[in-house]
Image (cartoon, rainbow, N blue to C red; front, side):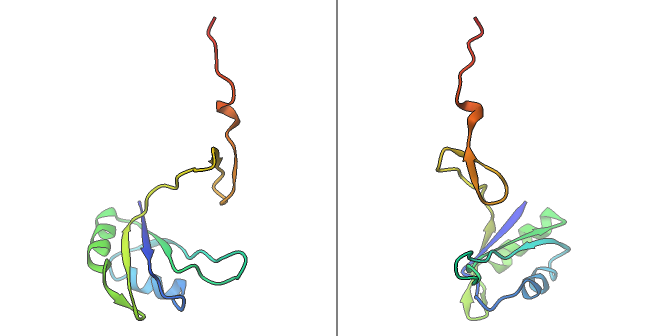
Amino acid sequence: MTIYIGNLSFQASEDDIKSVFAEYGEVTRISLPIDRETGRKRGFAFVDMADEAKEDQAISELDGAEWLGRELRVNKARPRTDDGGGSSTGDGSSRPNRSNRFSHNPL
């Protein structure tokens, strides 16, 4: 499971985020997206932890908490939706979903 952290201060670094979530358990991954055009942080992050129960505890205790002058929104991340008719490639881009282009007629 992945945790979504919204309304994050632009000053927050990966190390800052890790230190907060490490109080709840082992942090296995942090993603702090950067805007491609401006090079600035986008104001949200994703955190993976080794233990799902610890993730749930972090979510319940940190959602709504004030940190670095912002009230955090912390919840379970939802899967990305594909609004463009393509399939997610995992690298942030989309390609047309050609596997559904033709129907299979068993006759």
